[in-house]
Image (cartoon, rainbow, N blue to C red; front, side, top):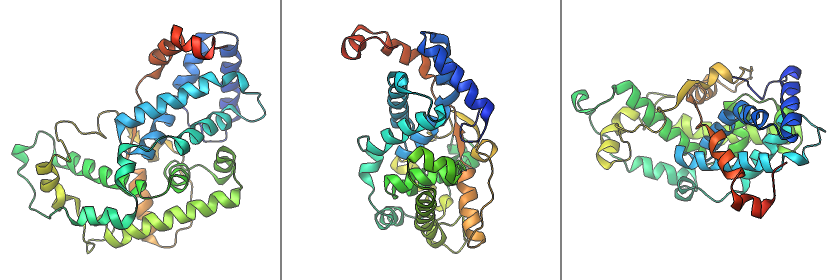
Amino acid sequence: MINPFTEDKKRDSQDGELVASALKGDKGALGRLVERHQNWIYNIALRMVGNPQDAEDVAQEALLKIITKLSTFQGRSSFRTWAYRVVTNHVLNMKKSSAENKLVSFDQYWESIDGTPDMDMPDQNGIPVDMPLLLEEINIHCMMGMLLCLNRELRLTFILGEVFGVSDKIGSEILEISRDLFRQRLSRARNKLYDFMREKCGLIQDENPCHCDRKMKALLDSGSIDPGNLMFQQNYMYRVKTISGERQHRFRNLLTSKCRRLFREHPFQNSPDFIASLREILESSEFEHIFGPVQ
């Protein structure tokens, strides 16, 4: 699987060839182009909305925009830069997801966490999945919630720069901002998120007040976590760190480094296969009536 955020002239050239063929009506080339990028677009969407079902809708909408705007791509930048500008504009301006509507600040989020009682661990015999897998699910749920406490601009910059290791050069091109501004936003996002984790999260320091294992039983009892339907384990592909392209940062301290590693340990999800569903949409009479034939 390609990493679209590395500087790779061969990959850019391959994208360009597929775009040229797709614009000539080659549906196979269009499908291969979607296949090369759909996992990354889906994983950006997932971290922006915090829910796999919502992320599927967001990713499909973004891919549809890329396809319908493909004839406007003039090659002045790489296809990567152009396509992910379409994606980032979409996720910055889309309607708020259900999860986003529930959270507005880190203080509000902590009130919700603190209001979940600490309890003894449940009996493993009564749970249909292994305890470590369930603990990871709770951890990911919680950290997705932390991301939603950032405003969309900071959240997107954090996802690109910190989670997926996008350089300030590529990040600034995608977001159409200066490299300095990209670094400033990334720094602000890190500070807000990691300050919260350093103060509250037991994964960072044992003496912190919140520990996933202590919240587990209450989350199971309330139905917030369904052990028979783990949201973030179903389409597991890799750990993010294995494909994001490690970049070295200078950290303020070791705790900051640990926070970042936790986000990089999350699964990189295999997206739904959007090719068939997009083709059905594009070939429908309703779509052609509204937008005309796709060139």
